[in-house]
Length: 158
Image 1 (cartoon, rainbow, N blue to C red):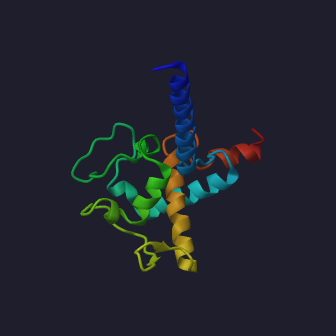
Image 2: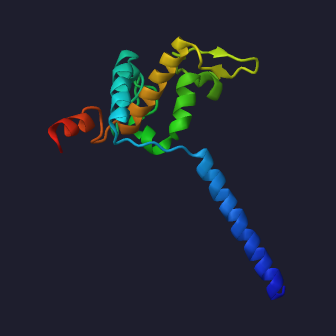
């Protein structure tokens, strides 16, 4: 291989690496957890988490063992193990991601001809807001950022 061939291959590698990084960044969504809007969502999420009684099946403390009642994964690990956008899909339709799962489907949306959810009607909008709120709560569960921390700091001036 001569120098010209080597530099051509090296240039292609740089281009492909840049394209791959751009594609990766485009498919990964990030969100801030240190805003009042996020805390409001996480607060609603905590309320919905309690209303749906998620802790009846899920472990929610570090090291909590599974037993006859606690049969579902430990949600304290969700922020470390799961992509936030995947959690949304799971909450919307767990059966589509794992047929036969014991996780109930609490949310129902209208579907288009291809079976994709339609979020345009008012009820669907409210349901999706709840799904996002539960996801947001899972992202701070077991941390110093659980609901109450951000708003309390803003009120006290910390």
